[in-house]
Length: 65
Image (cartoon, rainbow, N blue to C red; front, side, top):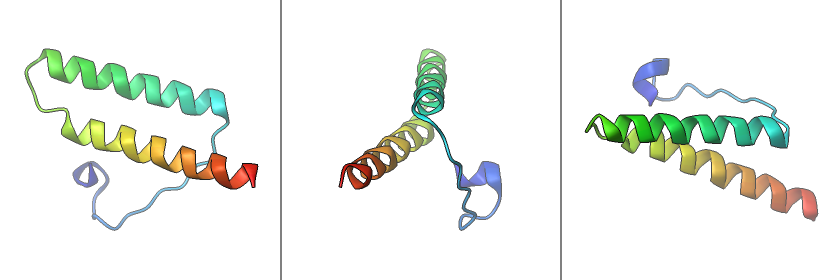
């Protein structure tokens, strides 16, 4: 994914509510499915989905205390 943004160490932080998070994950899943249907490797998109889900889970646990 880093090749889309430039340098590998570029970091972007965004604040999302739960609806926006679900919307982004769903869009990424649809993108992944489209890439797979074309016979291409969706690994970069899958990695991004997992990173977002993992981060959301960590934030959720932190908020619960």
